[in-house]
Length: 512
Image (cartoon, rainbow, N blue to C red):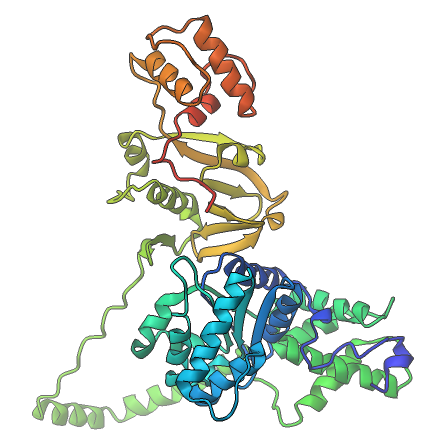
């Protein structure tokens, strides 16, 4: 680019090609990467990433390709608008499967099958990535679904990542592709950047390109965000034009004036939008004119209504607008439309993980007591791993979410408003104010010491005949259990000890 040496860039900062080196990891982009990596690591089969044109989907995919282990084979299809046979040939070519033009459809499929089996036997992975998947025909999408049937008794041999524009979600959810829709285990939709991330995105690309001090004024960056709606490709276009203008003027500092001029050049035909006040004034004048005409011509209106009546035309009542309940069930998960119900919804989902059904959402406190649960609240995040149970996380700045499970370095959460999502664990560090879990106290009856001794015996800490007496041997065994589980070895049956001793196969765990 002509301005690179002028501004001290090593390379073009705002190119339109998806270079993973320039990837700005906004919270959304981190979540998208975490979702996809989770799907790959857990061998979930189908993964789908969607987003608007220019939102950074392809850059995310190229970033992930750079992170894959060396024993991973990939096939990246960039133009999937082909027939199923042609798609199969492209996949085989990318995977390096030996074929020739004379081979039939079955022979090509057998060759792919053999390749995937050999990969599995060597402990290698095979991933098919299809970009612009919204361009695929229903026949091609169904063919890809059938490819996922290539499997052993224990695992899938091929993982598929579908990447496309928002309409891909509608295509996949169609009745014709219902079976494919049901197989997509991990989904993420990439939204545009907000104003704060737009500013950080611009400065990030300037630094990666080699500039030390150059920056865009904050006010100007906000103007760019309004123009681009936070779409990275459009942000790049605006910034590139702005740098070109500043270079043409021999100015090493970017001003808001440069940005405004650049946007005018990018949209020469765009007319200025009407201000809201002017719109309302215009509508008010029109309304007054119509009202005046109607009143002056009242006899015309009456005559018209009489004609309508003569033809027995009736006006239907305006249908009632259905309002979604404040707390509702969607895809087996309780959700809400209001932040104030976040904790309640988290409790409902936590009870569901415990296997509870037919829950009364109105009197949840009574429901918890009636079903024999106790609640324990703590603020030591390290204790999450000690209990290894699903927990409600109360976040310092954004309400509550349910920690459903852990998968590697990722947390599987249930957001009360958005549903299931996956985040890297390090994104939660320092953001949790306190934590809440449910447990069932099995040591409340008259025979609690007998049950205690039986539990300690199961864990190998009590080797004596069971008797319903809390003596020195029982206390010593309890202390050994506490020490082995990272608790204070007090020999007292406190709440944390009760929680750990009450665990059995009916208790949900965080590990998958």
